[in-house]
Image 1 (cartoon, rainbow, N blue to C red):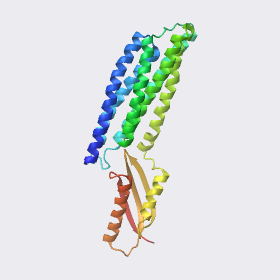
Image 2 (cartoon, rainbow, N blue to C red):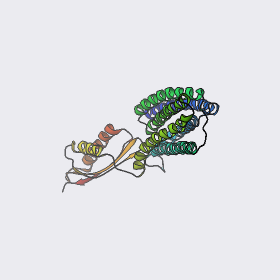
Image 3 (spheres, rainbow, N blue to C red):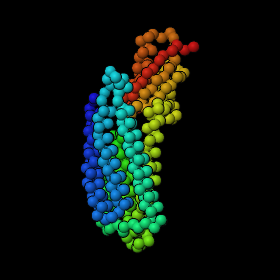
Image 4 (tube, one colour):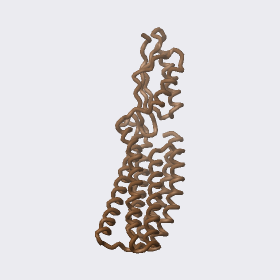
Amino acid sequence: MDKEEVAREKGIYRVTIVGSVVNFLLLLFKFFAGIMGHSAAMLADAVHSLSDFVTDIIVIVFVRISSKPEDEGHDYGHGKYETLATAIIGIILLGVGFGIFWNGASSIYRFLHGGSLQEPGMLALIAALVSVAFKEALYRYTVFKGKRLNSQAVVANAWHHRSDALSSIGTAIGIGGAILLGNHWRVLDPIAAVVVSFFIMKVAVKLLIPCVDELLEKSLPADVENEIQKIILSFPGVSSPHHLRTRRIGNYYAIEVHVRMDGKITLEEAHRTATAIENTLKGQFGKGTHVGIHVEPVK
């Protein structure tokens, strides 16, 4: 592992540990406020924070694995472990969103059929507002670091923080309405939980779609493939790039392509040109890019 990869791994750990400490403290406060403040929405929000804490642990474990170099059993490295971590975060988010929806919908159903709901306490409202402030700050910090570190898992985790902030906004509105508007409006507490659940599930789907594409070996976007062909054709004597196959492996690309060169040049010249193309592609898309070039004579 080179110095750049070591620095990247340390950066990912640093931002994830900051998030896990904040999440742990918030989830303890939310559970306490939800129980003492008699708020179903706050307890649901606490469960969401618990899922945030769990995903922090997942990121720490999987990023260490994904940073390992190529070995005998993994010719293309371990980059897809980070993709797998992102997918797990998405699945957890989807499950949390559905759980919050089910809990809120059940409370609404009971209320509409004559059941009573407890009035949430002021402590629950304070906890929701505190959570909004901390989680939005944590989202901005984490997404900034994730993009700088080029880490899918860290960016995915940032969106988990944002979904928790959205959850807390909905929770604050529901709890505040239930407190200020009286008994007939206590149903605002679970209604807020249901509304927020849809935001959470939307974020989950947004994270899962690119992960599924990568795990199913979907080709890179057309603009990236066009750029690859443009780089190849910039070399004198190289023509007709074809059988271009591309895919993403974690934070890196894998590129395989056939090109044509003059059949009269020596093998050494063809090798030198192919190596120059490979180095240029790695310079453009990252040192970890896997490049395979098959040379054919011009027909």
